[in-house]
Length: 264
Image: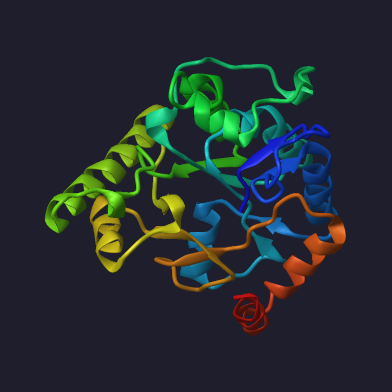
C-alpha cells in the first residue's frame, strides 16, 4: 500500500515516511521486485488466480490510494520502465480535466506538494495535486495500471448525522457514482473498491456488492483470502532490508498474523 512517491527534501514534513516514499527509494523497492522474480498483478489478474487456482511465481499487488499527481509524475515512469503492474484507487470526484502533464521520464524533476500541502489544495483547486482523466487513461491503456475506485468523495460516512438508512443510501450513491465515472471515462469494468480511511461495516459491504464491486480492499495490515476484506501491507519510505522483511513475513499467512498481533 502506497500513497505518494515524491522528491523528498531535507526539510520534508515530519511523519511523512509512512505516507510518502522518496523517488529513489521507490525505484529501489520496485527494482527488488523486478529482479527477484515477483509477478505484479492487476485486479483482473487477482480474480483469475481466485477463479482458476493457478498461482504465478511470487504474486504481489502494488496499490496506490487517492490519485495524487505524483503517482503519474514519479511512480508511473518507474513502474513503466520495469514493466510492473499496479492498481490505482482514485477518488473520482477529485479527478479533473488537466490534460497530460510532464513526468520524470520527460525531464520533470522538481518536488511536488507534500501530503499536507496536497490536502490543503483540495479545498481550492484539486486539479493541481490530483491526476487527470487523460493521465489515468494513458496509464490504463499501457496495460500496466489498473484504475479502480476509492469512492467519489472520500467522505467518512460514520461521522455524519444521518439516520442509518439515509447514510447507507448516500454511501451507495457515492460508490456507484465512482464506479460509473471510471467506466465512462476509461471504458473499462470497475470491480474493485478501496474503503476510505479503512472504515467499513457489514452494511457497507452489502452496499458495495449491490453496486457491483467484487473486490473490497481495506487498510488492515497483513494478508487475507477474503475478497470482501482484503488486507494490505503499508510500505513507506523504508530501505531494502526492511522491504525484504515485510515481503518475507507477509508471504507466510501464519507468520503475518502473528507479526501484526505482536505489533498491536
